[in-house]
Image 1 (cartoon, rainbow, N blue to C red):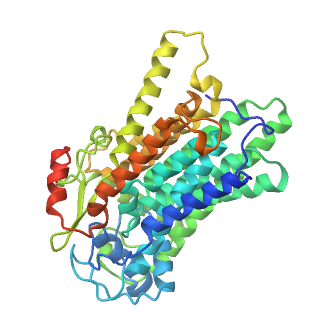
Image 2 (image 1 turned 60 degrees about the vertical axis):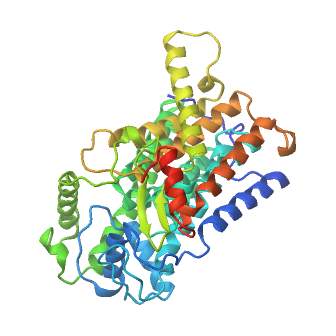
Image 3 (image 1 turned 90 degrees about the vertical axis):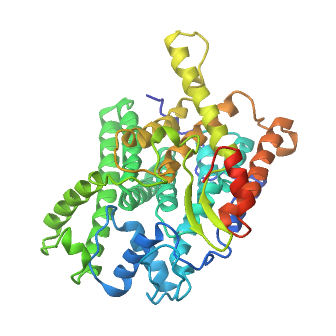
Length: 462
């Protein structure tokens, strides 16, 4: 599928140099600044916090068994942060809009931190995949200023955790491929841990081990000697074993913490046989997931996600509201470039063009392309209601692929930021401007009515 990068030519996990360090700090700072401040606002229950808040309270405070269609790992991480942050378990999560009886910030901090780190992981991944410093910085800026990621980072949810762990596991795996000895093993172990967490956050996180195995098996097939092939098999076994152990550990904690009879017993009652209970509960979860057929006013089909035709109304206050809506420059720009790339690859291959294709000049471009397909294809046949935030993993992979391609085409120069083309600044500036234009419905801080009219005018009518 794609050629394994030679050790000496691949990008390391962290790039030295003053400019790279400065860009790293800027992107990390923007990620934190745009997501963390005032995360206790609104001090009311927001959209999916109804379900996730109940589960976190059960894990850390009541112990009553509840049922969920998602694995427990993400909620356990949120529970740990809430406990350390002084949450007392008193918030009523029975419906959207209920005022919080204590600060909800400890429950929102883990999704906020995960969302804050996504832009910098994208920056690192782009450098690992061969992007110029300017291109990687542009990718980080796009992720930092995407309104959808900001909204999802500021509520109790799983999607920013999912995307962060998925990207970080890939980055650790790519770092392992460029090293040998103990550092290689360490990065392989880290990738396995993060992969286990990714699957344990949402089942859509299965894209992480799927992509990792594509990479590892591809590398294995290209090894020239039996010894190297055996080493490759050992690395695959190590990666898989660690990921499985982390996944099972989350379920062990789940059964230990939810130990009191509760509403979840109507779906499944544990028998104290860990393996049997885990397998049986998975069957019930998959069945319940497939059985969700009730339509939702904000649900959407996969083919609508790119155009953001169904933004999600998360919260309504006194003439203020929060919408899950992406930055049009990021979503539409990425979609346009990615469609251009995919179309070019298909028609160029079909036409048997003799000139080098982008994936021939940078074979590892297949990594984000494969990541996109592995993320989006399993969602296509699903009949139950899906939402715009289900597109976030695929969106991120398409952005990475698009940035790599425009970098290969020369849109960005392998030169200092001040020497980039005017079009570079126009694109980056447009992203920032679009973010601030939509920020009132991202943060829910200003009167809603004028922005409802604006959203309707550009086709996002709530």
